[in-house]
Length: 289
Image (cartoon, rainbow, N blue to C red; front, side):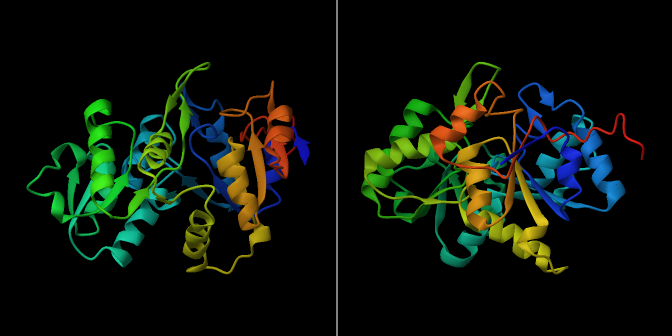
């Protein structure tokens, strides 16, 4: 584990960089200051990069557009790999028909709608259609009534032996500098304990997320894991997932893990990144290039 002052020295060592989104590229306040310099440098050096995110709230196109509105044009839909894409793949392979009930916004249902299945928000499940529900998916922490619809979800899962997919494993996310909000992964964990069933999870730290991205890259080029580095702000998802898949990892201190307590968190979790860096910003000031 090495503390690195400038992300440039890390970027120079690898051919491909996986970035987490929230806490690495953006925060609750907008883009991480200076992050656009990183993508300008990667483009100049011919480095390949992907945003590997647990955000299943919107399609890759919508996620890319959100970066464009903030002024970061370098991130395009084909550079985004979302856990929602793994959910779609599962549905294509395992759920041939029926109704997919979900918790989330209409935008988050993008992935399951593309599978050609009928989708239904949990609020619209009733006695007339409940027998046709073939799978339940947790997509996003918005778009539903927490009291009414979470109780309805519990009772649906108690009544029907159907597979349950959690498309975003994040349990919380920063809302402000000092507050967090419960994410859909946290909601799913609570309901899982209530109904006494084991849910199927996609997203970091699951290795499937990294294998999906790795296979996507190898469709067009040969690359080894030693040529890829994972950059994240959360030990239990980004860093653990990258480590499990055999990648070098970078813990940045712009999101869930802060400079004031990163050492204690690493010791407590027992999860060791390859590098620690204040941010994923490439600083070219003072360099003779």
